[in-house]
Image (cartoon, rainbow, N blue to C red; front, top):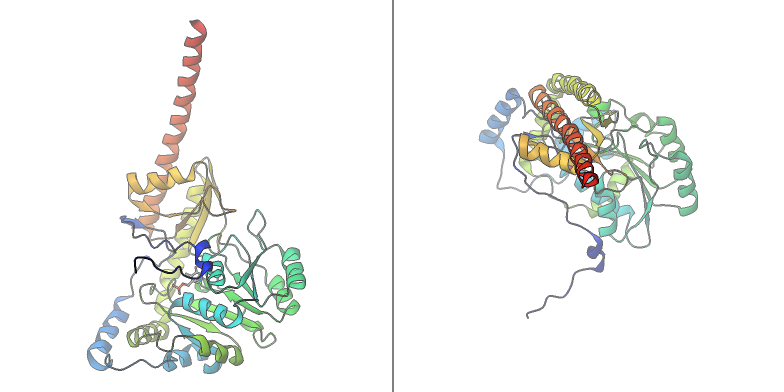
Length: 378
Ligand SMILES: *Cc1c(COP(=O)(O)O)cnc(C)c1O
């Protein structure tokens, strides 16, 4: 056959997730932790790999040990916890189980792209309730959409990626009260924001909370995340999930990191200090509008943002994330909070780029006016 039958028509509108591996000396584009696992955890991991991981055996489908630790730390039972191959897998599982043809998901753009992508991929209708110009959730519109559309899933990234915005707890509670939809509160940046909806789980069975090992715990390369939810929700998700998605090595490494999680505290505090450096540093550069953030990244707006992004990469080897093509984020760039050296290098580069842009625009004006004068003189 020279021809291939086309795939499902839904795929036509979906763009593949940009996993371009752009090389740069300073990588501040994916909200990763700038530090690798602490040495003491790496040593223990090496020991475990040599001694007792049966790589020849299939892994425990439910990551029992890790699940028990996470449950205990959150005052829950193991049946309230699902471990997945990154938070991303769990988002897909939730949408596979609660979405699908004839079902609806409320999305609050601009936000994390995977919610909308997974919804479209599974034939779930997406009801968009855009955020305000300050990137806050539009409470009245969201409650109206819940009432009118009767969605099956509501997803709220809290803090919101990529804007850094927190949604007030009172509004989240209003949402939980207004609907029996599964309300997924994505707390991927919980260790930085230190705010959680966990205390509301007992009263609201439809609340599910997503967390990840990819950000504060330095394990983006490992792929581990978890969901806290009512046991009946977890039970449904185990019907749609890939049974062996969390491999043995990941279970061991994530368990070690979770058990030793106090050692990440110093890094988290350093990230908070470096975030302040970025907010103040960018705020001091004329022409840059900075948005407040409760996470390990900062969104900012600047004229000709794509050119700024390119200059950062090509002239300074600093890679950040370009959101200029995302509706609602025109002229916006997002920088991940790196180490202090990386942050200083980013800020110096920004200062240089913006200074030369101002010089060029003056120069450009002079050129134009002198040409006009010349023309006038002719
Ligand atoms: C990073 C992130 C996740 C999950 O990432 P994984 O690496 O798949 O665990 C989920 N939600 C948001 C908003 C994120 O930024």
